[in-house]
Amino acid sequence: MKFHQFKIRFVENKKIFFGISIAVLLIGVIFNVIFGARLDIQFTGGAIVNYSFTGEINTDELAALVEETTGKSVNVNESTDIVAGEDGTINNNVSIEFAGNDALSLEGQKAMEDAIQEKYPDNGFQKLESDSVDPVNGEKFLLKCLCAVGLAAVLMIIYIAFRFRKIGGWSAGVGAVIALLHDVAVIYFTFVVFRMPVDDNFIAVVLTILGYSLNDTIIIYDRIRENRRIMGPRAEIGELVNTSINQTLTRTINTSVATVMAVGVVYNLSSVVTFALPLMFGIICGCYSSTCITGPLWVVWRRYRAKKLDAKKA
Image 1 (cartoon, one colour):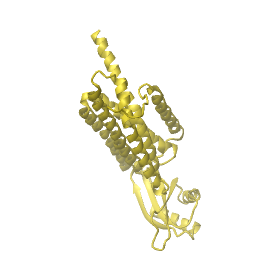
Image 2 (tube, helix red, strand yellow):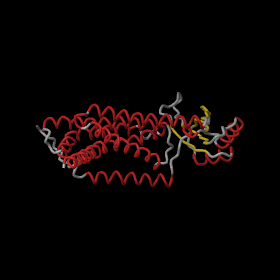
Image 3 (tube, rainbow, N blue to C red):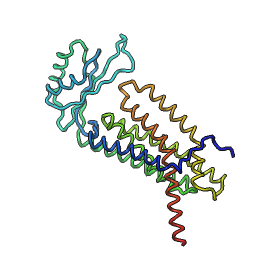
Image 4 (cartoon, rainbow, N blue to C red):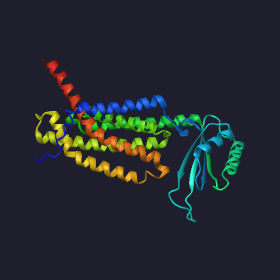
């Protein structure tokens, strides 16, 4: 059998890898405690009004104008159309979000529009749409999203446990899900650190990375299962895992780099920043967790189980 050129000792260096993950998660927790997460009105309830305009504006000045006019706290997010209009002009879009239980009245919307038109007469402001979300519906939507992520994790454990039952399926499944939860936490902290509102993009990124990272993990588990057959049941488990991860490392890195580069192409489009940025972090984290966390974690669990069995026999 021809082994791969990489000879990284993943299992022997597990404390370093685990330490890096713990440090990253602690930094995220600190940011979360200090700054907190910004939940989008999709989850908290509130109102949102979208406008298109041309030229440039200061979003902080626009937010201050709307707050002064309506007496409500707002968040203002700017984006740019990907395709130019018929006259070649590229329109910018701005979303004005009102969080809270009270919907913005028609009178309030009219007063806001008049104030904006007076403040920015040369920017061609036009209202695209307005919508409101009931707080109860927002909470239900958030709960359904979390249930979807939880259900996906449970199904992953069952699938991995069945598929890799010959190498300790349940331990493999639990180890994979722990790594996936690690990835979800990093994605969440990306939203917190970069002060992006947690919205449906967060759920989309999480579900994308769950599938992406799990695919890398399954490939490694497949290689472990194959190498156990080739190297024999007496092969030392640490060497078995090191060999398997090194054999798949080139494929994992190449796939991750290519995907990050593809996502990076659209990163500069402001309308997809809250999806593209956490997705890139999630891909990098998924590559790291599947190679540096899942395998060594599985080895730790198998060795622990072996010691318990030896103790019972003694």
